[in-house]
Image 1: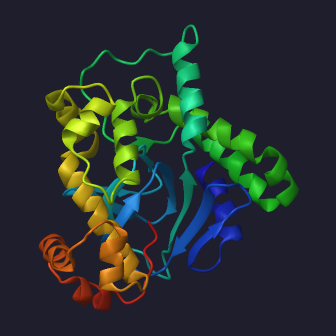
Image 2: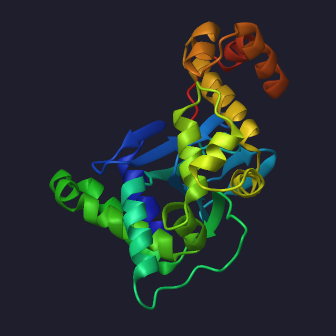
Image 3: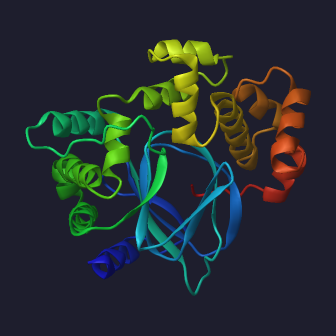
Length: 296
């Protein structure tokens, strides 16, 4: 099954880069140049590798995955991502599938409320927002059916939403199902707070404000947030700001423009914090990266 999916994708993308399929939120990517990990921000997504290996680093923890596991990210997270072994002889080939929050929430709640559905464990711990999951037959089958639509624009337009919904359901019932249902279903307070933080990067949001937003005590919120993201809320906001700024600089934006775009009032403070995190000044970092856009 994996071989059939790989052949299908190879026939649809023959040059380096990322291309959209006819289904909203589903893209294919191909990389033939090894690139070290660089700042990126993962949004809720499933990343499937069909050839080669991909690496992501979340607060010092390394995730290396290939065609034996897929990456499932249920919340917005500041990471470093790269393609350590890609080459023309052995290109990185994969599929990037955005998780539609509205549809994922509907499916999660429906699963939880359906009689006989698998019950979530009664645990006070928060599942991580990013995890690797093993393929199963249902996942492979729905992924193949989804990607087959890319060969026909009419089929994609008519059947795309239903096939994507079918794929989401496979993810919710698969190896990453518990973490995914906790992020999108009933009791998804941490995911809501992360979404709120991500939308308010330019503001000085406090832990008390976030805890109050989701109805938790400061201590409980802080603990659950760190379980989900591997970092404190303050660390999360700073890392997300700096990662987004780094991506903007790599894409050609000036240092001052990037600093202001992510909420920094002082360019000197931005430069200090940037150098502390990446070991280079924003200007040095931009020059070293050129205008290469990282495929997250």
